[in-house]
Image 1: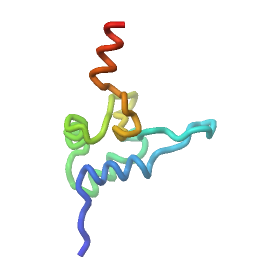
Image 2 (image 1 turned 45 degrees about the vertical axis):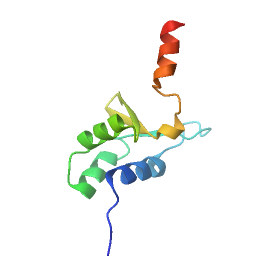
Image 3 (image 1 turned 60 degrees about the vertical axis):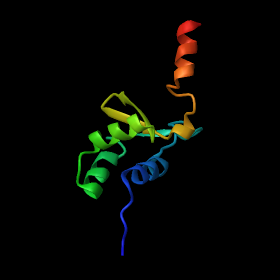
Image 4 (image 1 turned 180 degrees about the vertical axis):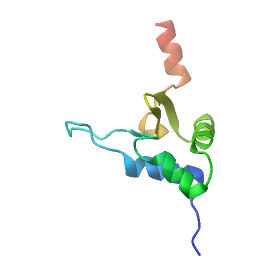
Length: 96
């Protein structure tokens, strides 16, 4: 029997599998663009639901990180960006 991945498992696997190298080939990006990588269409096909709502919920829950970018949304894994949008980091920047 085939068991479906959860939305979080699917998204985390997608980030790891769909990452690309920088144009100069010196480093791998830490996340993916949901539109350009094909993630949105794959998510919609696999789960038959809106990926935008699901990704938003995962970001709020802290399962993934994300931000709006040109042409869509960029998502990544929290462990790859440990200081991204951490409240302590933001407060330190404000008070500096």
